[in-house]
Every structure is written in C-alpha cells, then in structure tokens.
Image 1 (cartoon, rainbow, N blue to C red):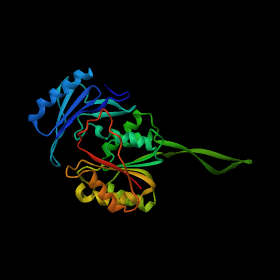
Image 2: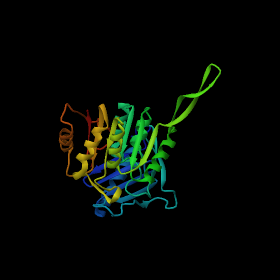
Image 3: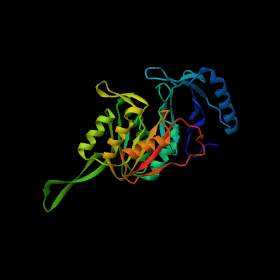
Image 4: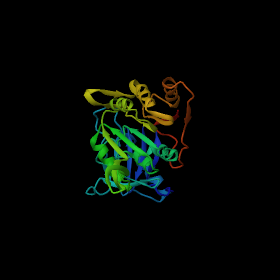
Length: 309
C-alpha cells in the first residue's frame, strides 16, 4: 500500500543493495551485478503485493570510491522518454533525474528525518551539503526561513526547481520606513527580502563565515558525503572531518537547536555519532530518533540521530 501523498520511497533494503520507487519508475541500487536477478525478482514480488509495476526500471552500481561512474542505466521500459519525473513525498513535490548520477535527486532513506524536521517547525534552518535541497523544501513548507549550502551550483539550481514545484516563494515581503514624507504621512514601501537562500560554497569554509556574522539557526542538517571535494583542492572525509564539522555547526546553533547527524560511513553506528556529539558539546544533550515509517524497511545504509542542545 502507498502512503497518501507519497510516490517516492524505499521498497526493499538488504546488505549492499536496495530498491526504490520514484513515481512511475523503479531504481535498483546494487554493489554486484550478480545480485541483479534476485533484486528484479524482489521488485516483481513487491509489485504484485502492492498492485503496482514500474513503467521504467533503472539499475545503478554502488561505487566504492570517488571518480567511479554510478549513473543509473535503463534496463526496462521506453528508452525515448525523458529521464526526469516529478514525485511526491509527504505531500511535497520533487523532481528526479535518472541521468544525473549519484542519486536521482531525492534520498528516500531520509524521509523520516524530513518529516521530523517539519514537526520541529524551526524558525531558521541551515541545510549543509544540501544537494537538491529536499530538507530545505520540507522546512520551508512549515514556514521556516532556509539557507541551503552546497559546492555544486547545478544541484542548488535543482533545489530552486523543487521550491518552484511546491509554490514556495523565495522572497518574503517586508515593510520598511522610508525617509520621504508627503504631508503628515510617512510613505511605506514593501521590499522583497530573501526568505530562502542558496549558497554555492565549500561547507566548512562557509560555516566559519556564518559564525563571524553571528548568524544562528534553530535546525541544522549535517548529512555530508563519505568523501567529497571542496574549494582550494581540499577534500572532505567523514571519518576525519565530521567532528570539526559538528563543532562549527554548534557555534551557529541557537539555544535549544536540533542538529541532524547523518552518515553513510559503514564503519560508524548511532553510538559513534553520540560519542562525537558528547565530545563536541559535553553539556546536557538530548537525542531524538524519528519513528521508522512503516514503508521504510528496517535495514538501511544510513546512520543518523538528532542532537538537541
């Protein structure tokens, strides 16, 4: 059964493989070609139970290191159709693109955390390594001002498209007193100011800039890649740099802020994230874990926990 307002979710998860539905299409992600027949069979069995079969099926080999190709390949369905499609999650719209590589544009395993963010209803949200800004859209949908930071301009452009799909205005009207006066009445003019910002910048560098400005956020998303390249030929490795990333985030967190700690680094579990959080902020911390959605399988590659200051 499909949840109301949701056409993108994980169908099956196992060690080193998973299947996701994206609207009319299915994506099989696997580390070994030898597992493909088993996963195709699993998709067919699930489809029979759910009374849904994909019009298109893609496969994607999960890469072991940077530089390897992980662009999905069409293995079933019409090859002439656009690789783009609009999907929904919890009533929100997102554009996926199967030709983009890495991910079509929406990480289904983060659905519970996006729903949790909406329940938090923060006043200001910072989304780092924002990719196509799905967390930002979720926060904006409940009235939060958002700042999305990612080194990729093309990813942020896709994020803007997701805002447009949901009818979210990037600007908020603000009234400013003007100096000009006509008779006894002051003229007031509405000025559009950014409510949702998109910054193409190396995340650690930009966090330091936000700290110097004194900006504060009520919710911060830390979901970095296991490995990435930043500005000035710098690299990011989660096992080496996550703690310093969290330290920089804590500096710009408002009192009582919630910070999502999330990683696909296979060597870590939730307790590792808790220990890092306690080292960075040894005060009275509280941790939250969203309830697993019934459509989300129990086995999942990501490790995550919310840290509440």
